[in-house]
Length: 296
Image (cartoon, rainbow, N blue to C red; front, side, top):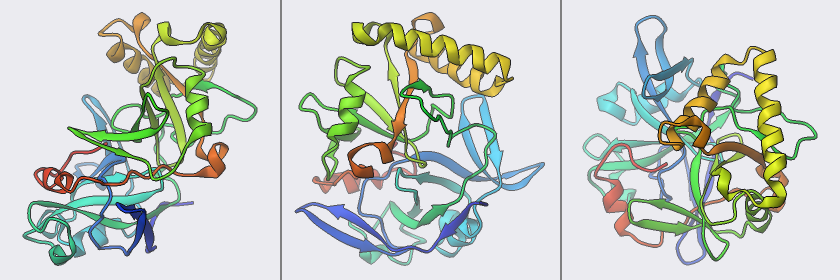
């Protein structure tokens, strides 16, 4: 299915155990987060949606309706170009400068860069990288999709809760995620990060020394099997992404890098509950308005 931006009203949890309904074009009252993409002009392909990390760059056709929506709301002086985020619940977000945005009076902060809900992503962006893989009958595999600037970045706290963090702001999920955290704990003995992308896939960067002894051999076998699979099936782009992740997390030495492990899909945990961080400190809105990017 070709990707498109759907006009859907969403419910966003807010402080005080409340929810608020948000329509496309309205200010977004939750944390600005998700997979990082940009709408840019390409010399060879026209207007495209871009994923980028340092020298790694991939382009694809934008979802239908996205550029028009960004233009109509005044993104980048009406050009519609600029950065977006896609959350784990497929909400498409951007930030629009208050000087050009007509709904500033509805926002928690009425100046600077205001987070705005654009609509929901339907379909797949069709990158050559497998960001929506299918691993039937597998409990664990290597995550070989985008592993930089991708997915919502969550932390597992010492009291077994999911926390979203940015700068000095820490917000808990509105829901419990016991199944997901238990699966995470099988492969990491201490609290740390996990990532959830817009397709609901969950992956973890696992330091090899932190894998519990009972799982260490299986993790090694999974990685060796994936490497053989990638070599025999010509998965050069996937291998490059995994090797880059190992190098970055190993301070330049891939043999010491953290293994990017795919631990499952949100539908497998906690009745499919999607984590939703709740802003409990209004100072966040002030800090978030100071830059167009921010959040992850």
